[in-house]
Length: 394
Image (tube, rainbow, N blue to C red; front, side):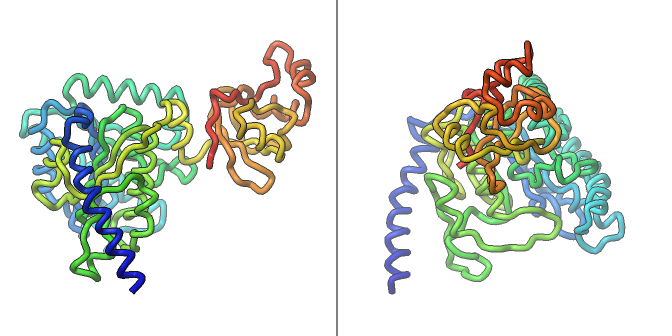
């Protein structure tokens, strides 16, 4: 009975909010859509047996071309799912080297099909392969941003994917949902659209509860996590959890997300035209500045410094990280790299752009700033990470 009351109150609230969602997406206060990142799942582009769904490619390309006033970046899954059968596997392999081999085969098939469908519509595409180090290294990040912007300005549709063939665990973003969120921030998108095989985030598993309905609107992705259900998919990585993680990353940058079905003919066109479809997740009302957002969403900084409790308290008060509070160094990094700040229990407390390499920090850890400055000489004043180059990890 309590559960029934709870759901009644919840759906009453959703009914009111769903009207507001329409205003947010299509109303007078909506931000005009000029640039969209569209992520397409493997189950939309392949049939689970290693074959491409050619009609899906054509339909998506047509919807993109039919909105010429919107610049669209496509984050395309499907490489592993399109390649495993050619290598003699009955399903997508789990071993890394076999998945990489399948991706190498499947990526050529996926890109050939994208090339064909867009050429039929008189448009050009470009392949952009990224790895996590392209996103964590600030200089490479800026280069990728400039390249994507140049392609979009010339009317070319970038097809983005992770470079699965050569990516190692430490260099992988891990899934295309989160890659799409990072890409959305990279290109300053106005909307992130995640096309999947369901019509949005459901209140319960629609495979077990035919009367389950999509939740039309949420203020934030975290509020939807309790409604995720486990669903194994052949040839794909992730699920609804990774989509909500991606939506959370995008929201922090001020980008709304729509999770909707890639199998409904009108869903993508509705999303691209600013209509209400699937589940709409609102952007943060206080988005992070670009540099802080970039630091916060990176999957794995390349190194870390270990700090004491005093340093943790200081940086949470927006103070600089000084050598006095550092007790150890982990990994190899250079000046300007993004690193983690972890406490004595190994918990990440912050991350920021470091002002020294790991060998220099090893020379000055535990010293007062004046002592560190004397050791470093002309190389610095002892401040390891400035507060305006740091983001707190909650």
